[in-house]
Amino acid sequence: MIIGVPKEIKNNENRVGLTPAGVAAFVNAGHKVLVEKTAGESIGYTDEDYVAAGAEMIDGAKDVWDQSEMIVKVKEPIEEEYGFFRKGMILYTYLHLAADKPLTDALLKSGVTSIAYETIIGKGGGLPCLMPMSEIAGRMSVQEGAKYLEKRFGGRGVLLAGVPGVEKGNVVIIGGGNVGTNACKIAVGMGANVTILDVNANRLAYLDDIFPRQITTLYSSRENIRAALQKADLVIGAVLLPGRTTPKLVKKEDLAIMKPGAVIVDVAVDQGGCVETTHATTHDDPTFIVDGIVHYCVANMPGAVARTATQALVNATVPYGLAIAGKGVSKALLDDPGLLAGLNTYDGKCTFPGVAEALDLEYVEPASLL
Image (cartoon, rainbow, N blue to C red; front, side, top):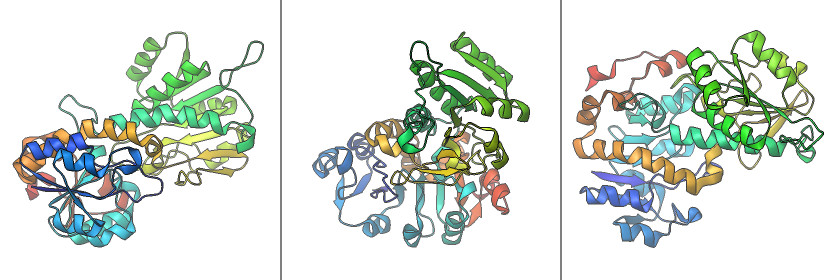
């Protein structure tokens, strides 16, 4: 199979779909890999590194897309890339379609076979291709939140760790999955007071066990969320419903009960966000203020630590990519129900229930099309 790796063009997105080691894995399996020139340059992977791994370097994104049977990316295509779509092309990347109707419409109209990293299910459960970015975004969320609590960014001027004789900062994490757990690790490590909320009692018990006496766990009810918001200096939105639009658990009216200059980091922004006042921002212009509350809502947070993020992502995505390339997309999907769960569009049909529900589309059972 011919694999294409175009350069990412989303704002400040320095990740790349394959490292040279990832390219070598495909080449050693008998596949041809086309990489757009300078695709990995910003994170230290030179064109020479890719050539040494067996890639052919291509000058221009259009030629990469046109000549490839499967495109391996990091972020969802943006509007200027829609024109590259064609029937039967395999697109293997993060998609987050439930929050992106224009992209979904373009994929359906063109007949692209799109496989979303974020909805692939591992053999033992979980979301193996989403997990590394969730870990990074969770850890970054506290790091970024701590920065934007500084007065020069409009924050309260609170140091999360406090100092002797001064109260520590209060961090509230809504959602106890991978993002929330990793946010908790960093917040606890910084010495903050941490409250984490989730609707899964077993998850709360697990968190209470691994962070004994260091955190407060609460069931994520409306009343508990509002009570926690009143005390919060930093709120981390870490809610995930795989492939579906995120519920709005923090309402606009809730901002009025928060401390002026408190910070919200909504990690769920790429699925629509769990805060009603969320809208996606970029690394160039990461924050905005609503009713005195600083919002940080960058939709590609791991892009800021692109070398680490690329290496972690490729470790997770290459095994599935090799299966698709080696067996052909239909057999690979039918052989692995977890990979089949990653199929979001096929031959003009919506094949993921969460996307169909969010965008009011007809859902077609994917196995019936293969």
